[in-house]
Length: 107
Image 1 (cartoon, rainbow, N blue to C red):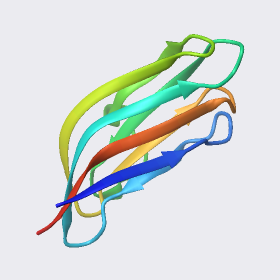
Image 2 (cartoon, rainbow, N blue to C red):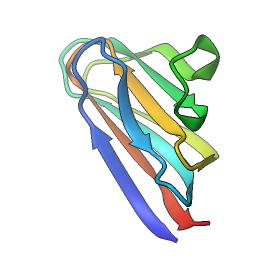
Image 3 (cartoon, rainbow, N blue to C red):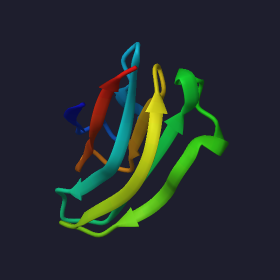
């Protein structure tokens, strides 16, 4: 099992792949940390796309959740993903950083 830490500071209002599970692998995502580096509050989204499916409303774990200025939000996820699953993120402005923490294991 290998520890992973994936990060992204996506462009504003752009759905962005934070992490894609590699082939022949499963990943336990323990948490996603969202940091607002800006001086104003904004919103964010986190979704899970099974097998890399196109974006759909049913995939969202968090949708337009507000994060205060200069604040940190820790989403305790605790989900196992399989090969080609994607974790996607969306930031209301360009001041957010997302960090996925978990463990990858070959299957």
